[in-house]
Amino acid sequence: MAPRFNFFRLLPALIRVLSTTTSALFFLLRWLLISGLVGGLAGTASAGFLVALDGVTHWREAHPWALPWHCCQERVCSSG
Image 1: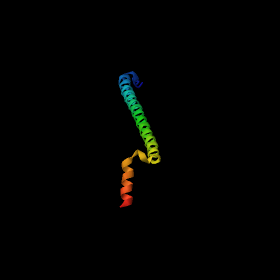
Image 2 (image 1 turned 120 degrees about the vertical axis):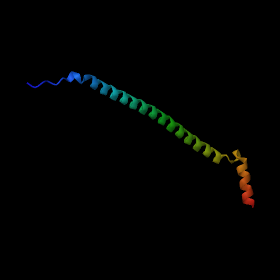
Image 3 (image 1 turned 30 degrees about the horizontal axis):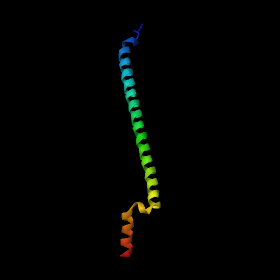
């Protein structure tokens, strides 16, 4: 009769591999979550800045008196 293979002898090695795999997976998921949050916040801040910039640009075009040096520059350029 052939000797039977003892699976229990491999159990500590299997636990080490699973433990390493689990901690690597946890590490990867943690950094994916952190990077996703940072990316979402940066994207939201960028979108908010662009919306505010668009609103300020429309306001500035509707109120030319808000930038007096701009008006003076046009007068100098148009008279010369």
